Image (cartoon, rainbow, N blue to C red):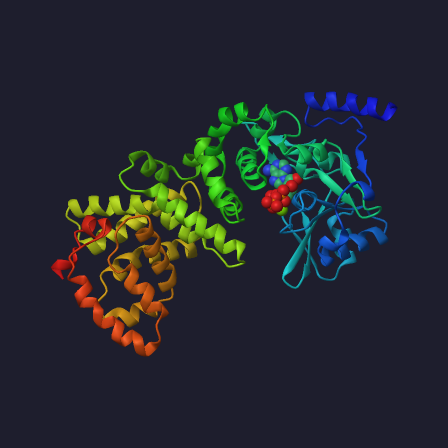
Length: 448
Ligand code: ATP
Ligand code: MG
C-alpha cells in the first residue's frame, strides 16, 4: 500500500519533469508473472549478462529485445544495460571493443553477433540547442535515470539477470498489454529534445500495431517541422529502421497519413501530389516486395527504394532537359545526378548506394532498348537483377515496358535456350509500343 502510494506520488512528479531526480520504486514483475524465457534470449547476450553478474555488476536486457519478447516476437538484437563502466566491461571480455565518442559503449563480438553493452546513462546534464534538441548527454547514471532518458514506456523495461524479473519504472508493462505507445515525460519536451522520436513513434505504431497515447498526436503534428533540423546522416540511419525491418508498407502508409513523408522525401511528395505517374503504386509495390524479401530472410537494398521514390522525378527532369536541347543520354545522366543531389541534402545516401541507384535507372533504358548483340552483355552486368526487378515492378503497376516479360524469361532459361530466345528481340521491338519513360526521353524504338 505504502509502496503504491509512493509510486503514485512519484508518477505524478514524473508528469511535471522528464528528468525528475526523486527516487522511484519500480514495479518488479517476477519470473512467474511474465512470459520471458531464457531459451528465447541469444546465448551470447546471456553469456555477457551472467559474466557481468558474476563479477558483481548489474546486468539487464533492455529496450527492443525485452519489448519484443514480451510481445511474443523474435528480437533482432539484444542490448544490455549495466552499472559497469565501458573499461570495466572491456576488462571482462577479450572480444570487446569500446566505440563512440559522444557516449562510449562496449561492443562484445561473438562471430556475426554483436552484443551492445551500455553503461546506465543519466539525462540530467543534457545540453540543449535553441530548438531544445539534445546536443550531448555523456553522463553515466543509475538504472532509474537510465529508464527516464528512454523514449517510450514500452522501451524502458529491464530484464534482470540476477533474478529473471522485469523491472518497470514507467508502467510499460501495462502499455504493452494495452497496445499503447506512451512517451516518458512531457511529449512536447521530449520531441523537441530529439525530433527523431517523432519518426520513432510512427515506426513503433506501424511495427507493433500500437495506438498513440492521447497526448502524442498533437505535439507530433506541431513539432514535425523540427525534422528539418535533423542531420541527413541521422535520417539515413533512421530510414533503415523505418523501411528495412519488415514493416515498410505500414510505415509508409502511416507517414503519408501523418503528412510526414515530405520531411524524408520532399521530391517524392511532389510526385505524389502531381498524380501524373502512379508513383504511389510503384512505391507500394517495392515496399511490399521489400517486406516479403525480409520475411524470407533475403536481403533488400535501400537503392531499390530510392530508385522507386525518385523514379518519376528523374523521368520528368530528363524530359525537361531533352526539351531544352540535351541529347537523351546526357539528359538522363544529368537528371539522375541532379535529383540525387537534391535528395541527399535531406537524407545522406552513401556513394555506393547512389551508384547502384543510377545503375538501376540506367538499366531501364538499356533493358528496354536491348538488341541481339548486347543482350548477353547486359545480362552479365552486376546490377542486371536489380535493374530487371525494377523493370518488372514498373510493368506490374501499369507502366507498359515492352521487354519485361522477355527479360524475365531470358533470366530463367539455360544458356542454350537463351541463344534462341534472343532472336525474338527484333520482332518484339517492332511492335512500336514504348514506355512513358522512353517516350519522355524521345528514345522511341521505331527510330532505331
Ligand atoms: P528495434 O527492435 O526496432 O531496434 P528498439 O526499441 O530496440 O527497437 P533502438 O533504436 O534499437 O530501438 O533503440 C534501443 C533502445 O534505446 C530503445 O528501446 C530506447 O529505449 C532507447 N532509445 C533509442 N533511441 C532513442 C531516442 N531517440 N530517445 C530516447 N531513447 C532512445
Ligand atoms: Mg534495437
